Image 1 (cartoon, rainbow, N blue to C red):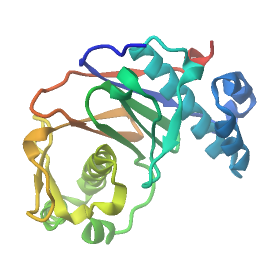
Image 2 (image 1 turned 180 degrees about the horizontal axis):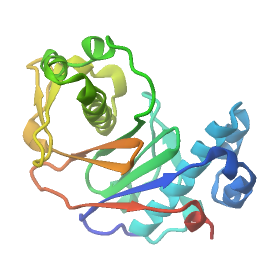
Image 3 (image 1 turned 120 degrees about the vertical axis):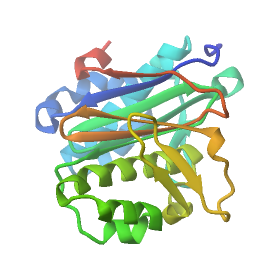
Length: 244
């Protein structure tokens, strides 16, 4: 099987009403592997089962839109840093994807030939004032403090989703210290990143984007474009669209 040539980066989001979707999870069962079904059975909370199943159904559907492979045929493994990645060979190994979920939303990004990361956050949750001081870079924390109180929550999630998306695209998770890189928010231009000398990376490799898929959610996207900017396509899909 052959994946499409290098092209767009695709981001799909799907809203989840966990209580309403419990009864339809069986419709996705045929898409899951034996290992995935086993994992579903280990979740204690129904909402966690919904997010996991929708995430895997979303990923399988997206990947099959980029390569002529049946949705049931995709194989995944979990990295040492806890992220799912493809366990495929040949040309299909060029495909990359990443998943994120939060209360009320699941997101997946997929692309050919470049590493990608996505993070979604529910913005209605309460925040403690010391999170930015503990986890953000000094530049980001200072920029946040300068803002009026009414704006701080929104900008906090701008930083948080971008930072999570970047470490997920690197595939290293929190092994990368969050205070060793900084984002410059410069709307309407895309966000830019800067690195401390100890962090071995080049800002020119990276492309970032953000969107608000619902009034309650913020999404950050990181693309290792290596100087070749990608067009990003955002699409909202309904749970029923994943049922075949």
